[in-house]
Length: 195
Figure 1 (cartoon, rainbow, N blue to C red):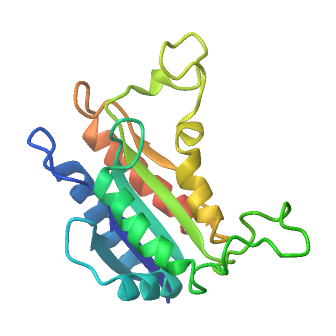
Figure 2 (cartoon, rainbow, N blue to C red; figure 1 turned 180 degrees about the vertical axis):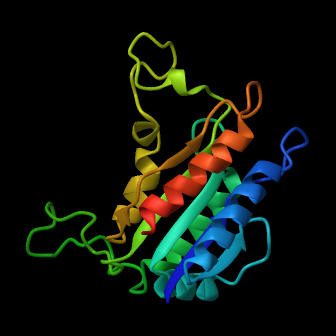
Figure 3 (cartoon, rainbow, N blue to C red; figure 1 turned 90 degrees about the horizontal axis):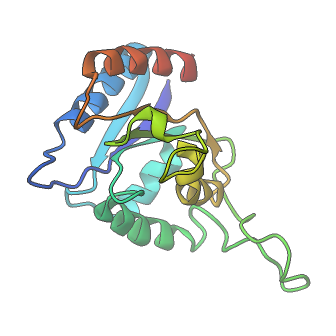
């Protein structure tokens, strides 16, 4: 049996209660359990123990972060979780410092990760339409992809030597939602990434 930690990064706002993110997590969890995965879920709004969260990251074969995109990044409670859990994990649990050595301190930054062989996946919900990405004529992202926008998140996991699974995205969820189609795409995505 393989182990999956799903982190629910949703932060409650009056206009965004987290129903879609919860539904995505519920569907992922059910599908993975049907594939004989052991699944644990941590919501960043719930109380958590830093040591237990580090132990869960070491236990998991794959970490999935389910997050709404807030101001072009992770919600602030996810950032707080990362600041608390991942910073503590730098003390030899998730990585051995930043990977540099005293004999050549200008080389090897970011190579101290201790979670080699483990994977991670970002699953994101956007107000932005799909057409806003990968198109240089678009005003805001100017041709950037979702993964370009989330490069800092990818680098955080690479810092621990984790490998990415393909990012899953639900677009335009507030003004032009296609939720049932998103659920179908999610099922296909999980089947492909967790075969």
